[in-house]
Image 1 (cartoon, rainbow, N blue to C red):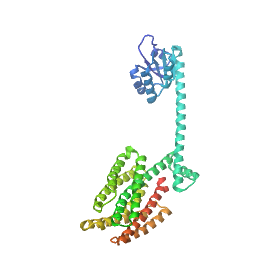
Image 2: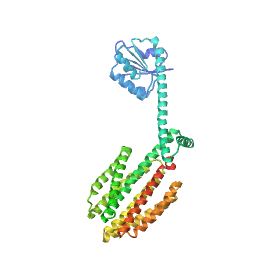
Image 3: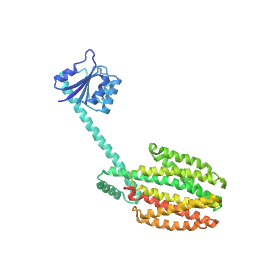
Image 4: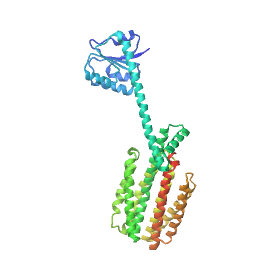
Length: 424
């Protein structure tokens, strides 16, 4: 039996809706006032809501819109108001039958059935539209994921799609879901790489300033200092634009604040007496960048992002070791000994991570080749440490640390583009 909820104001001329509906075989759930119409319709969802409203107003139509949004059901409205504008508002508010000066008990069942039929038709159209919209959005995801795979691994569009389809079959997911995972993995891989670059640049800046203070290839060192500035600004701009503000806004702002303190301290001319202050500010920048990097890694669902973080950290350690060795030349006494101890700790961390990367299961021919080159470049850097007391040794240390940085930039990018990272 069809159930109905009745809403009617107790005014002169109002029909006996509840009694008439019951008389034609419709089960009446109850009669409500306008103020609790929506609440009761949600609490006891009827097959149809039947209303008598002689002069519908904006509040009435607003209530019907709220009902359509929270607990949609067929709505039949009887009224004496034939205003064309109100007819349009009634349709927009989700009324399925709007009867003007046409109430009659003998018509009730047919009008109720008509309202139900229109409601079912609208629901079918909404469902169809939602399906079309979903397929369209899924197609966009697939296209984006294919583009990521094509750029990362130099594969054809057909091969990228076959890879997505195979992954969806193995994981029992839709291709769109797999595509979204690829997009998310690429997004966080890029963010982890960029935040990791900020860690490295915090150390490269001070290393370069130390080389300038020591008079080592001033023009080349000045160019590298300018390059470091540009890379910091570029990465900060991308991270600020692309990262979710609710999730990472506070961390990005902390990095920006630390950079805001370090940047003016690096303005020329730089005095050797200020190197300790500059290094302390760079350490603050490093701490904030590291915090952002770690949070990006743990926020993403892909555990493979850890290797990007670790590889990127090697870039920072290569610059940190060179910085500590150079600063050790510029200071004396206890400060020099502190720098020496710090350099040994950095050296041990770098070598430990080299062993970790060599044993990591995430590997390709390209990655293994770059790791071999990095091991050789590491040997050149450690050899240069022995002559850091002289100008030529300092030059060699600067060049070897730059060469190691380039290799780990390439290696980190290779990890970022690897199938294991992108496909989880």
